[in-house]
Image 1 (cartoon, rainbow, N blue to C red):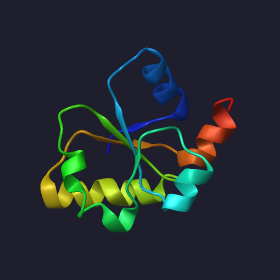
Image 2: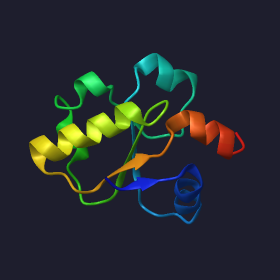
Image 3: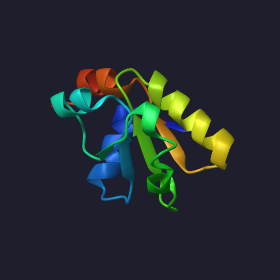
Length: 100
């Protein structure tokens, strides 16, 4: 599974790379703090799989990086997606690494 550290992701975003962000936490978690992108809670990823179907890289994130790993594994197994990237450590790591 491909992954980015918070620093790698921030650098790519600052350089203007075309990366989609998907937050698989619950909506209230997304509303409390997020780095952009769209909110698709883990339990709804199959219902909204069409949002994952494009050719640009998609960084999937959650609070600690575990739910995003699960989401990526499920989408890869069921649909063969190969353009999904996990944010290592999720929002916890982002908050510790990146000045917010």
